[in-house]
Image (cartoon, rainbow, N blue to C red; front, side, top):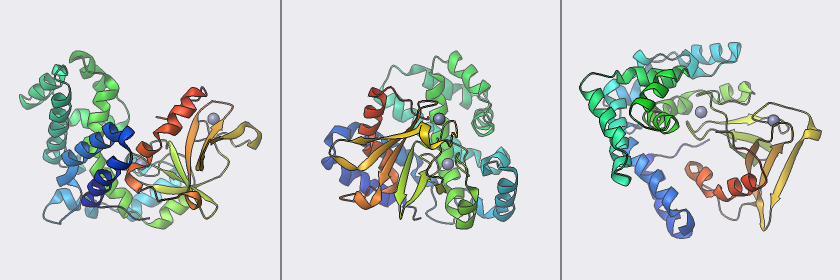
Length: 288
Ligand SMILES: [Zn+2]
Ligand SMILES: [Zn+2]
């Protein structure tokens, strides 16, 4: 599995816009978010923020994760992260969204409160890492921000660092994981690829790609083949929508051998937005 550099990703997005005018808005937003994160992806080894994963006992973390069936993120604590780097991305994304919608005044107040030391920024980050999002909901309400949107902004800040782990774990770790949630960040995937008759789940957050059973619902983990179904998309044999009749959740599927041109790793979710629309129209539910 190959991870694309930031420069490669930005180029792919720029090249995709003229081919997918209907998706311009989403692709441009993705590009702007990447710009906010850009300096924090590995490009050089000049400071701790770019080589932080090298300090982790990755082998040990992989063993613990496999033994206890918990994603690696479960064993990370916030002291491993560089506050300045996280805050820098957070600040850039806040300014990005304010520039797009000046009505988002609450964001400005939030960042001012963080700068004045009235709110602990790292407490917010910790909430996202530990999955107890109570402090996020509290501050979202206080500053009139949608809780999901605040969590989204926090995740943008964490993303380059978590992706770094997903790049550096061993491929045997992915092969041995064999569970539905992402082995690195624990998020439930909404998209998959079929390659050489194997199904791989893709994590939109950290970029992990890992093998999975063909017949399993990624939401409720139902494995009964007669309650797992799929939908074809008219005129698009390279895609299908797998769904579970028990919980009504779906998974987007890219059938690689039927693709007329490859779908790059970083924009699968955007380029398959039409599948989400088909699925939602059919009354199905997305995983995230
Ligand atoms: Zn992940
Ligand atoms: Zn299900």
